[in-house]
Structure formats: structure tokens, C-alpha cells
Image 1 (cartoon, one colour):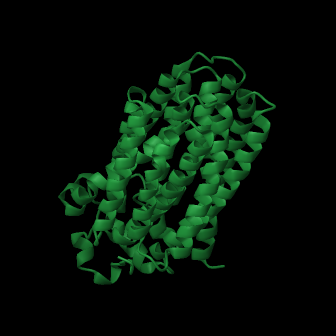
Image 2 (spheres, one colour):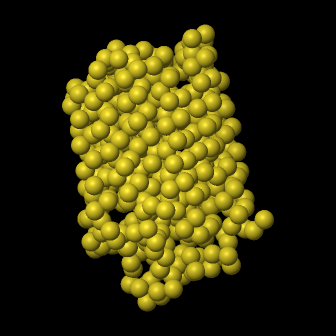
Image 3 (tube, helix red, strand yellow):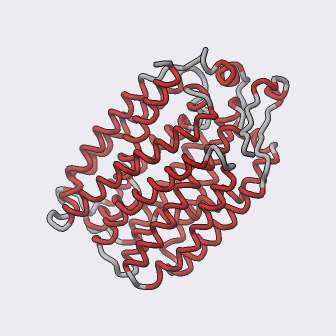
Length: 410
């Protein structure tokens, strides 16, 4: 097995394990857990808002975290403490300190820092581990496997939730998540930088001068994609708190637990579909189609659990496509020497939109919140589709045309 093939396998294993862990620390599972231990809707919204704020700040301050030698080791090392922090939630499962919202939020914020540092690495590693043109295929495989595993976990939780109190159930889930994160870090430790087999891509990474994160402001494409990334993040943020929206609409833990399995199925189908069509269609088209899926959001307001779950499935299907298509497009369009600062600002804009959504969610009616998410997603999808050239060329690489790799679908 070549270095590149081994890196692909390790990347898939590490990402799938990490996805399952993040599922326990954010989103539907975690929001339901917070509700089960007695925290109010406003406290849950506040927790999500603070986590997003810390995530944005960490990405901005450490945009060069993946630069230099052996970024794969840095990625591996930040995953180990992230996993250990899951053990800090165990006292809440036992009913001890359940009123200490500050303590629980502090743990969440530390996990957010680790996740942000790993995110910075994740958008730099494809240039080092395998060819960027393989990124779409690798991400599609990761998405399908993660969705299948998440579906299994969701179904198991749905079965057990009717028999075991939710907080007691998470008493076993959190240690498993800690173990998975440790295994993900171990898998990442075995990455090998495939210098010879990805010589051109690695030359762009290892020989390019260090670029300031703020130099991106001089690139026109930053401003062209600013509203697209921000609005995409806002729509994604609303999806993140849909479990809390469901609770505010009068639905119970049974529905929110079912949302976990449903999101896994939608994610599996979305990633599988993108993997099949990515070789034939431009990612821009996939982004537009996925963004338009948010048009189903008004069905959540009909008062029917079936319609709520149907709308959630369609929206999550679209979000899954967009989440894979956007980085797949940009990893072939953004040069390696500025991948760190560019993706840092892209994630800042995205997470900034998510932060805005979680910050205002508790002050808006469910109808207004969902309509804003619908509008933001549609405008974002159209913006990505309308931009035909996403090349962010640096002066250094412009003098080395053999290092420029454009996606043939653009």
C-alpha cells in the first residue's frame, strides 16, 4: 500500500471516529442531555452561543497552527485532551453538580478550543497527505461511513431511551466517546507526509513563504464569498439548534432522539449522492441543490411530528451535501500556501453565522428563525453558484504555474 493510500485509510478512520465523538458533544444528543439534567432553553442556547464564539476566536488566533513541519502530529495531539474532557461530563450524569451551568460550559469551551485547532489542521492536511483532487472522494466516503455509524448509535439510543433515563444513558456514551477520540488521535499519529507521491502539492506547502492571516483582505474573492460563507453558517446554526426548537414547539425527547437517526440517514444519502456525482458535476451545482433543500423548513411549524421529521431529514440531506461540496471545491481552488489563513477566515465567517443564529435563537419565534435560515441558505447557495472562478492565487504561486491545480468542473 502506497503512502497516499495509507493516508486515505487513516484519514477516513480518524474522521469517522471523531465525527461520532463530536455528535456527543454538540447538536441533538448534547442538547437533549442538557435538557434532561435540568438546564433551561435559554441556558442551552447560551451554551451553544459561547461554544461557537470560542471556536471562532480560536480559529482566528491560531490560523497558522497547522503551518510548519508535521501538522498531522499537532492534529493528533489536540484530539487526545478533547476526548479526555468527555469524562468531565460524568458527574452531571450522576446528578452531581447538575446546577453548575458554569462548570459544564467551561468543559464545553475547552472542547471547542480543541475542535477549532483540529479544524485548522484538517483543511491543511489534504495538501500533505494525498492529492487535493482526491478530497471529494475521501470526504464522501467519510460522510457515508460516519452516517451509517451515527444511524446505528441513534437507533440504539432510541431503543434504550424508553427504558433508561437519558442522563444515565449518557453515563455510558461519554466514556465511549473519550475512547473513540483517543483512537482517532492514534490513527492520525500514523500519517506520513507523502512528499514524493504528492511532490507538487507538498512543494507548495513546504517552500511557500508564511502568509499573514490578514493578507486575505487584499483578495477580491474574500469579499465575493463573504456573504455566502456567513449566510451558510447562519443556516447551519439554525439546524444545530433544531432540537431545542422542537422542544419549544412542544415535542418531547422521543422526537429529538429520533432526529439523531434521521440525520444519520440523511447524511449518508447526501454524502453517497455527492460521491457518485462529484466526478460529473461541478461542486457549485451540488451546493445550490443542497442549499435549496432548506425550502422545506416551514413544514416544521405545522405541529405534526411526522412533518417536522420529514423537513428535518430534507434539510439535513441538503446540509450534508453543502458541507462536503464547499471544502471539496475550495481545496482545489485555494493554493496551499494560503490554505491556512484562507480557510481560517472562511471558518470564521461560517462559525460567525452559526454564532449569530444561536445567539438570537432564544429571542425569535420559531417561525421567524426558520424563515431567516431558509432565506440565508438560498442566498448562500446562489452566491456560491454564481461565482465561476474561485482561484485565490498568491504572487509566489503565480510564478509557478505547474503548481496550480484547478478543478475541471469549475
